[in-house]
Length: 228
Ligand code: CDP
Image 1 (spheres, helix red, strand yellow):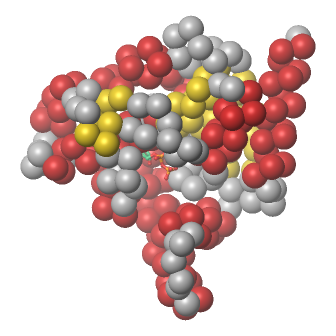
Image 2 (cartoon, rainbow, N blue to C red):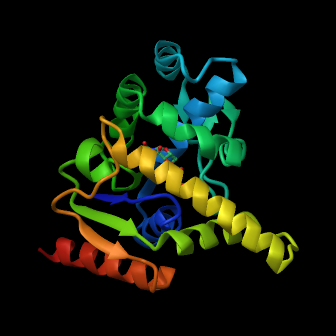
């Protein structure tokens, strides 16, 4: 069974995909991490992000792997180097959408994404899972949330262990909101595989729902589908 979860930045896809995967013993595929890994590799190797053919080449050359999980965090390696933390920085946030818009990069990611799901039950999350990667997915979810709420969640997630003042947090929420809006705009307006709900996707607005409530909605859909 394949569950596709698409949606904009900070809508809760990762947390919800992780929890659904845990409940049903499915494997989780974080496709955003793959685009982040391409952006990071380009920066690390001095490849100019505006040089589309060079970025395409790089995407076709690097080897991206998801080693077994440690606890609840997904690990990701590029050419056997763990980049799980390095891909989640504001620097990568601000440039990942540029490389993800290159058709050559997207084609390079498609084969490993589909190979990952061969012969197993998978919860895959991203922007184009229900539309392009797995158009025949058994269940498609389009997860949204109010942009201000998405920025707030992202900042709280980033500073889980920090002791920041409310003023510092408010400033960062505003900066994050601007960054999220820019990324949503780039992801939704690109020519290839833009962020959009598949016609047969179930849209869930998570603004006013807890993670548990959203997970339960998806779990109910899975049970229904299994019983069908
Ligand atoms: O976690 P967050 O929602 O902030 O982003 P992500 O899922 O890690 O994705 C990072 C970026 O990768 C997105 O902003 C898109 O530009 C790109 N992406 C994509 O183009 N297609 C996907 N299937 C997944 C991510």
